[in-house]
Amino acid sequence: MFLVTKKLSMSKESLKEFQKLFLQSPKLQEELKAVKDQEQFLCLAVERGKENGYEFTTQDIKDLLTEEAINDFTGNTPPQEVY
Image (cartoon, rainbow, N blue to C red; front, side, top):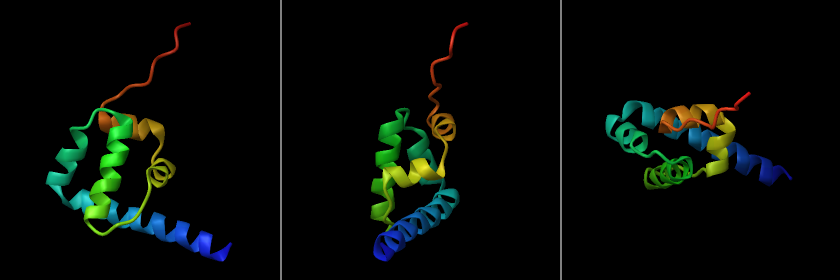
């Protein structure tokens, strides 16, 4: 159990470090903002993270960001309920 918890913690820490890189890299920001599909965005973020030495999953991103934040980032809007 300890090893699983430690790995999850390291994964989330890795994501937070990647987030710092993202905030400092206009090129990375442009690349990720150009993706309009949520799943593609998540996969590309994981891929770019790995390329830069960070290890995290799409679920780690989902846990860190709300669905609304991901949709705002990719320009997607969820379907509106009609009353």
